[in-house]
Image: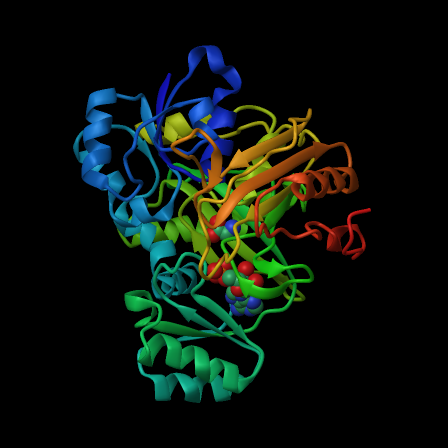
Length: 426
Ligand code: AMP
Ligand code: GLY
């Protein structure tokens, strides 16, 4: 089986390791990959957003299927292009990827599907948006509708913060086109959970639930980031199956009714409110860093399911779920200046490898002298797997502490709340 993997983050490194569990029969080509992926796959220097060159690469390599990591390629229509060329690919079409690429579209789908979500209003005019903020009251959430690399959501504690966010998006255009249309959304209170479902458009196989940690600093302080860590499982399989039945199935039906069936990986971002789970976002691809926590504790390989969806087959009616292989805690190690202005080129020294510990590379590269250096905002994702969440957390944090590069940033409290709130690794 030959797979073309599009992307070059820790998510793609985790996907590559997962696909290579049965290494003797899998050949992996990555575009563009990174320094970690290069150790296990053949990397080609093609950007994950360069659809023409990716198509040319696929036509040359003729993989059995292509697996797309980042949302950018999906929103640009990579799936439509590959399907037209007869090349199997896992992911949603451009029209279906709007479930992530347009938060306004996602709200419309949620409404049609009758799925619980925060009350929200769409606005393109700052004065009207500010009036809506005053009706909802603070705290309130201001969201750029378009893709903004995880930075387009501002949870405003006060009306004045909300006004500032509205001005930044609608008047100052600080989020570009992504912020020309916004949602003013009710603030929801509760634990966050991410549930992923692999879907053929109708049937869903749900993966192990995980919790992301989006803020930069311990104690959920500081700016939102792409994600600073995750742990899994954070709920049991029955919970994930319930989300597949009550949230994903009606959402997929609404997508089919709109003439844009969704196939690939549907990511439901949820807040578990006192009134039950409510959707705060959908993503149209594997989450990052949740994937780095989920896959190392996922029992049977997901490869047959990914392949089936990519070639257009139906998923089996019943996919037996195996219990998680322990607990996984992922600590992201980020570059100096992340998320605003990450610095690159800092030499990295990694501690020796350890059993049941995965060092997934994100923004890494080799310098001209062969030195491993930082090359992006999130640099590494360190996943420890252990029989207990406490031990997984201790080992993940401890390894992250021993990674050396100038200005590194990491959280020490991933999964701490689940363990009783102690913010220090014990
Ligand atoms: P998103 O980019 O949509 O995942 O949002 C980023 C983060 O903002 C989420 O992980 C939540 O922590 C927070 N958030 C988004 N929507 C809401 C909401 N309606 N209420 C409370 N927090 C939210
Ligand atoms: N973990 C958040 C995301 O993948 O968007």
